[in-house]
Amino acid sequence: MGLKLENATISLLVLFALAVTAHSANFDISKYGAKSNGDVAQALTKAWQAACASTIPSKVVVPRGIWKLSRVTFFGPCKAPIQFQLQGTLQAPSSANGFKDGDGWVTFERIDRLTLFGAGVFDGQGKTTYGKHCDRLKYCSKLPINVRFNFITNSVIRGVTTQDSKQFHIMVLSNNNVTFEKIRVIAPEDSYNTDGFHLGRSTKIRIVDSIIQTGDDCISIGDGNKDIRIDRITCGPGHGISIGSLGRYKNESPVEGVYVTNSIFKRTSNGVRIKTFAGSSAYAGAASDLHFCDLIMYDVNNPILVDQEYCPWGQCNLDIASKVKLSKISFKNIRGTSTSALAVNLVCSAIHGCKGLEMGNIDLKYQGPDGKIACECKNVKPIVTGKMYPPACNAKPGTTPAPDRAYQMAKHKVLNEAKSKKVH
Image (cartoon, rainbow, N blue to C red; front, side, top):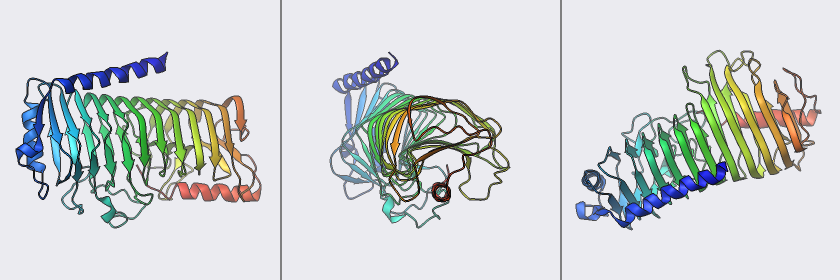
């Protein structure tokens, strides 16, 4: 019943978008001075301002072709529903100069009833910056985000592509009731900090029917997010879908209600992951109702990972447990192949454990030199239903099973590789 309601809601949003398309005033940027050999920032701004001021539904049109763009912010509120049709390619400067921490190259801000659609591309031209501005272990905050959505409500983003962002591809901050549908994210595997989507403090976000190929998390979910539905995603290459990292900052808001379903992971470094900081500099937080169901793993390094000893710099005092409370978690109907012997790794906090963690119908296979496939637990005893392969661990709090030497070496190799990535 819940899934039918979700599909009905998305269908209504799409019908709303189509209705607006049929009765809208068009504002083509070529009529506002846009030239293919020059910066179209001014033309885009003028077209947007005129459309936003319209008292009837309006549409900004970026026609086919390659349009160079230094940067732009589309401000609301607008007087009526507004569309942005991207048919061509907006191309960023190859240089990242002039951007401050957290800046977007293209930003949509404080808009209600926005429909962004088309077969066009946001081309961040990030290949010129990968590995040249920051060490791979550092977060490159001054590099621009391809597309930011700040304080957007009751909106649909459909069909567009974001390519080679210099940092995150899509940032979703303080949004409410927004659907992302049939989005394509493209970046090379060695493009660090280029999350496909990063969600922050948003409610009722839907990401569906999308393909994400990048060098970092396909989707990362920070603090304060509620009612997040991720369905029918193809992820890979990349680092999988992550909740966290949590506990890095003071006064983080809880994460409540994340559902990842019907998705495929191809040769990613992680499948589905929850990560929280440990150590003396970590803070309290909470995440609950986190559900991962009906997933397929193809040669994934860490298919199922809960890491409450997340320590990307290797400078944490792991004797001080994570203060983030995790509860009501489920991993169900997950199958495929793992490239590591440690296919299921549940490392929970010694303070809180992981309350109400359920697993069911897990069927993962491993063929490699590092011993038998295994499930390891720390500070948690999962509730198991149905098939479970690798067999579920039954470790007591604060202990781990006693694997053979080859398996133990494989475990440390996997964890070290996972923690040598980036920080969010």
